[in-house]
Amino acid sequence: MIVFEDVAKRYAGGYTALAGVSFEIRHGELVVLSGHSGAGKSTLLKLIPAIERPTAGTVRINGQDVSRLPSRAIPYLRRNLGLVLQESRLLFDRSVFDNVMLPLVITGHPPGDAAKRVAAALERVGLDGRGREMP
Image 1 (cartoon, rainbow, N blue to C red):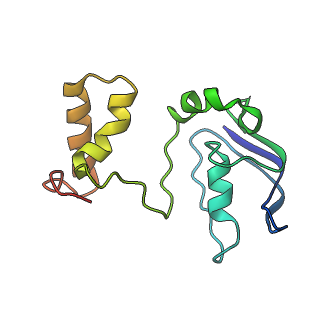
Image 2 (image 1 turned 135 degrees about the horizontal axis):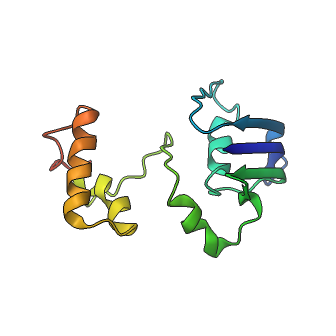
């Protein structure tokens, strides 16, 4: 479950990206986030895995207040989250297959199992046969 309680995000120079944002997303719920350019969509999404921290308010993931997590605990939070932002975060010196497989390797999946899961995921999104390509 994801809960935002009166969340605000202000940047240096006084720009306010979010103010008084509150909502709850339950497990299994499908949510669409839309808005014009500069509305704060990416900022809001970056608060969930603690890529950014709120200026005020609370962000909770499954009851855990991620807005106050110490930096050393953030990798453990992110192991259970997936987030794709509009900015590319691919490793350009690795293939598509290797980019998709990296999180599985980091979290300790056996290489054979990880490779099968990656192949299935690429097939599911129509990228089977493109795993050896570079981004």
